[in-house]
Amino acid sequence: MEEFSRASSLVLLDEACHAAGLDVQVMLGQAGLPGDILAQPENMISYQRMALLLDDCARASRDALFGLRLGLLQGTAVFGQLLYLVKNANTVGESLAELARYYHLHSSSGAVKLEVQNKLAILDYTPVLREGIPSRQAIEHAVAVGRQLLKMLLGSNWTPGSLYLQTAPGASARSYLRLLGTSPHFNSDRNAWTFDAVLLDAPLSDADPTLHALMQVHIDKLDELAPKELPGFVSQLLRDLLPSGKVSLDYIAAYMLLGARSLQRMLMEEGTSFQALLNETRQAEATRYLKESDISLTQLSGLLGYADLATFSKAFQRWFGVSPRQWRQANSESGANRSSVRARRRPSWLR
Image 1 (spheres, rainbow, N blue to C red):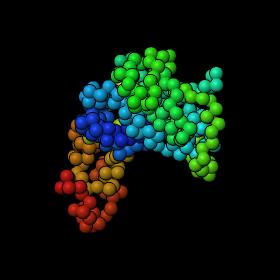
Image 2: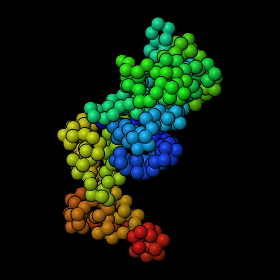
Image 3: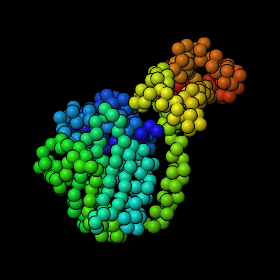
Image 4: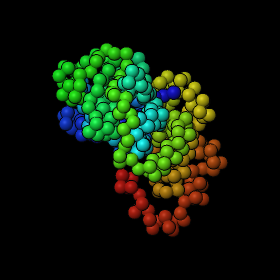
């Protein structure tokens, strides 16, 4: 399965880039991420591309701790809707256990695990990064978010415990101490915060049991839908890339840092195929434009990624049994009404 993460993982990236003297649009484009993704926090993005983005930002800004700083700036905001569940649990332990249980809804890029050993609580994060994808920025980003989560849950009871990292240090021990309040143990066998297990029983005084119950129902419904997210992610990419014409299986697979056969196999496991998703996306976009806009059929064929109108018309005839022109006449507003609203509804860039 492709490793996804909610785009909420990039919340405040624009602020972090600005502070580092970077153009956030340039950095997103360099990592192959959509320029408008920051405005769509619930959308899914490739975690591999997110890891590349953090590494690119660190190198471009010459700040080896860019990922760490970003995580500290973002804090629990990265969790989106999941935050409302974990912050309204009864105790710290229950909150962290729920985070571990439902983390895959936020990101399939790794696992969060909570365990107790020798009276120490261990909050562990294991990322899923492919060979050749740099890991330090992504790992430090994750543990920084973990620090802010523990700080939120424990309040005045929180003092930085021990931090273990699988990577080598990217900066001086003093830099980490200043930012985190503790010096990490590097080159470890895990990425984890440890603290007194007694704190797991600490109640969350501001928790709202009613809101927690409502969110539990909502999150459980999302959990049932989680296996279907791959087709939705591919459909989203197709909608974004249709106007460019870059909607081949090879291109989409490369965008996701996958092989074409791997992507096709994973889609088949979800009961669909790349061609089926491409057809469905084109059909939905075609009928929407034909019904709601006045753009020409030639313009529409281009927006759907076709080389020419003839190819689009042939595909449309195959899908619906009629030509695009006949479908528009049968399903759009009457000619009189269309004439009266034509100028108002047509986008300025198509006039």
